[in-house]
Amino acid sequence: GDSVTQMEGPVTLSEEAFLTINCTYTATGYPSLFWYVQYPGEGLQLLLKATKADDKGSNKGFEATYRKETTSFHLEKGSVQVSDSAVYFCALQGGNEKLTFGTGTRLTIIP
Amino acid sequence: DVKVTQSSRYLVKRTGEKVFLECVQDMDHENMFWYRQDPGLGLRLIYFSYDVKMKEKGDIPEGYSVSREKKERFSLILESASTNQTSMYLCASSSTGYRNQPQHFGDGTRLSIL
Image 1 (cartoon, rainbow over the protein chains, first blue to last red):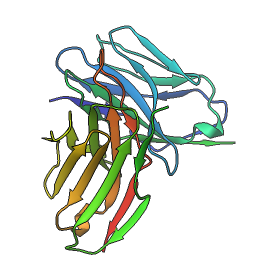
Image 2 (image 1 turned 90 degrees about the vertical axis):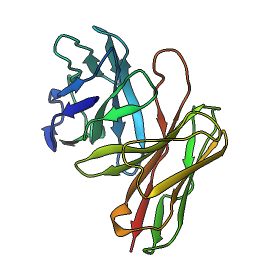
Image 3 (image 1 turned 60 degrees about the horizontal axis):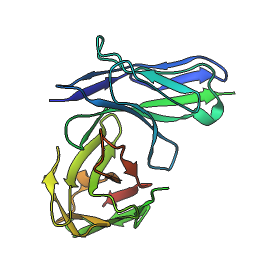
């Protein structure tokens, strides 16, 4: 079945550091890929998505590129802020409407 | 903006009680989902529904049931609550559109079973 493996946390970085959170997936066919973010005390919000190979999703300075050859969708940001502290989830959506999530990566940014 | 509203942010119940978690969405979405979120396990799908009165089991349906009598409302029912059902429960909705529309989430209900 479908599965998502993402970098284990927690991850702690200083403000303005470069961020990478790794995500790889296993799926049949051509899934869509998502990054969701969960701020403290809230539900999940869509951060970005990509629906086909080589697509780049971007939002709020975050980027991720759908790499079919490496089955990866790594999340990157060039300069993180304290307000980026949250839990980040990588997810895939196959032929139906169901999402398969990774286990989440807790990110803490220190001033 | 899509609004998914869960009836309670925090809920405390006792073992053996029948528990209802309610979710309402305001965007006329066809699809609705219930997940539970546990540390180290991510989100796991309990049940989902593609349409009114339709339901399908997700990955961990045991001990739960659902009801969807109206398009905007999707209820999760714990028939006889147990302590291992203490968790964060998240509801989501999505439309059936071209190429995998994203899911929109509520703020969650943190349920404690004593």
